[in-house]
Image (cartoon, rainbow, N blue to C red):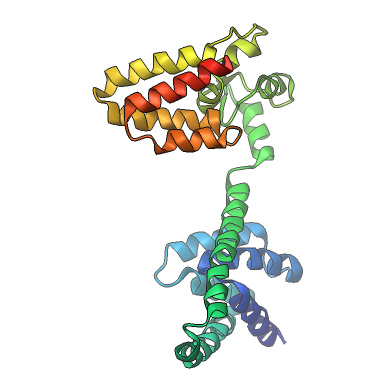
Length: 267
């Protein structure tokens, strides 16, 4: 019977989706694939509707999914199935917590739930991102119809990546380099086949420092910006040095330490 199965399936979703409404998404994707009740695109629509309506997102999504499968009664049954485990667990915990609140094993269990719930939410976020934004078929269809040049932007950090773009079937007209040039100031030169002169990073570090000092007019903001730059260069390969740089609170100390490291490395 559809109502009994709705209750049972959403009971399991409610029992294991620790971390809030978004943590139900991986289970809903799996449920849709297993039962055929809804597709991946349907889950994205559920998320959009649930986010834009009052109430907890997990409950809203259960109601939406149940209604979509079996009408009004299905929405009620799915919602009851989702919240029943929470009610049971909360009652049991409330009865036992007073007696075990100082128990180290109970503390460890609650501590373990934090990364577990974070992982569930991260997996859900990636699934939505991949569905909505990473659609290669749509990209290729648009590229074939475009009458103006297309520029690609995003995490291009090596000459090999740029050459792959140039020779691939979906090659854009141009590529925008942002963080790639911060991580590797010689990226454009390497892409063109040029030799990287020694001291390139050290010269870039010195020049950018002067530009930031002139732009901000103070050492505090310059220090924050240059720490961000050095995070690309020194971690994780030189973690000990990066920890020293991160702890620096004064610009002269930071500048001297980073400059010496770059000079010694010939970078």
